[in-house]
Each structure stands twice: as C-alpha cells, then as structure tokens.
Length: 319
Image 1 (cartoon, rainbow, N blue to C red):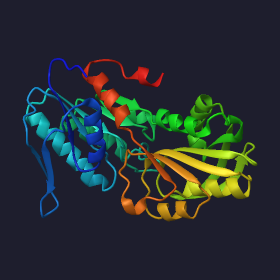
Image 2: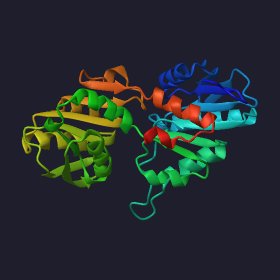
Image 3: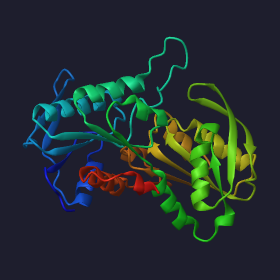
Image 4: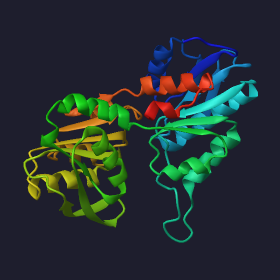
C-alpha cells in the first residue's frame, strides 16, 4: 500500500481486536498502541500510547454485547483522538448496535439508532464505516459520511465454491418478508430460484411459521438473513422447510452472529446442517458449534479503509 500525506493508524478497543489485527495485517501496518481498561466503579478508561497528531485514525469497534460498554469505549476513544489533534477519525463499526430501534413502533418509543448516531458524531468522528445495517435508512441518521459495506459478496463467494456446478439442486430461501430483497440479491448472483417463508410474529422474539411460498421439496436450501439474534425465526424456518417443505439439506448464512439467549441451543437442536457467519461479532468458544463456518471480514474492511484514505470511491467494491 502506497501511503501519501498524513500517517494512517489502526486502533482497536475491546470488542473485536482480532478483526482489527487482521485489518492491520492486510494493510501491512502495525496496530496503534492504546490501552482500554475499566475503573473499579465501571467507568471506561482510554490511554493512547502513541502520538496521533495529524494522523488519519481508524478505530475498529463493534457495538455488540456488552453493547453500552462497547459504545462508551468507542465514544471515549474518539474523544481522546480528537483532543490529541488527529487529522481525521473514522469509526469502523463491523456491527452497529441499536440498529433495530430505527423507528417508533408504538407511541412514546425512542429512536435509539438515531441517538447513537448523534453520540458518535458529537464525540468527534469524521466518518463511519460499517457493514450490513439492519435498516438501510440509518445511513441518513448520521450528519457525517457513512460508508455501508455489504457482507453478501463474502457469503456468495463461499456459497459459489460450495455449490459448484450443482445450481439446480439449490433454492435460496428468505426466512421472512423483511429479508426478501437480500435473498433476491443472492438468487441473482447464484442463479438459484427463490422461496419465501410467510410467518406471523406474535410478540418480540417469538415467531410462528405459517406457509412456504415456492417449491423446496428435495432441494438443498440456503437460508439468508442479515443477523441471527435468538435464532427463533431461523430455526422455525428450518423446521418448516424440513417437515412441511421436504427439503433435503439446509444451510443458513448471515452477516451478524448476535446469538443471544437460547440461540445456540436452538441452532444445535435444529435441522440446520451448516451455518455460515461473518466475524463482525466475536464468537466465544463456548458458543461455537461443529457446523459453524466463520468467514473473515478483514480483507473487505482493509480495502475500504485503503480507498477512504486515498479518497477513492468505495462503491466499486460492490459492482
């Protein structure tokens, strides 16, 4: 990588240091030296152990669980760099927390995604780089530039190798109506037909599968979603595809592995044969199952960072 002008530095807080290290390796750079600790009362403490004056700084931090703590680490590190005279600060957020609170679902609801966007801007970030926002309109919540990466090229590249020449044996399935656009993108790139799960959500984190739109009998299924939280939607869809639809094999893929509550146990007991995920959220060893496949996002983020640094467009990455 040929650098010009100001120095470029990659820093990490505590949420996803492995991704930050991999990004640095892809760019051929050393990791920025910093220390992120917590005082005895729970307050976050950030120390920058090298000068960032006049540097272009990228802070890699997913705002996954513990969500509030990770957000505070990001905000305080941005503030520290701003006060240390960094030339430009980019918040690299592989997984953007609070993204599902993007609208008022009922009276007197907050719009928490907008609040988090305002906090990041107020802290002093000049730009945000993130991947697969749960709601695309969140891009408009920021008053600073936001580059929105897509995880689908990484997943599709893996699936193409997995499928090979057996396209006719596979069907891409959307687990709900909200994921239809994403699933259509997969069908266009893979050349497979599309099916849709029609479900009725009774209350938060509880869903009931109602019907399968499309022919999946005897087919190998690719379930597509942007994130897996409690895995209720995904596992109910898998059960319906196997028991009602007569699917032969079920593979699922998603960008963000939130995997909260009973998610891992549900997936373990489900008919899902393989689950392909990206590493936007660290996978603890105790949650890792034999049928999990984790793909690295660092090469994609590294290319985007290089383009941002060199003032080149990011959009050609997804043409």
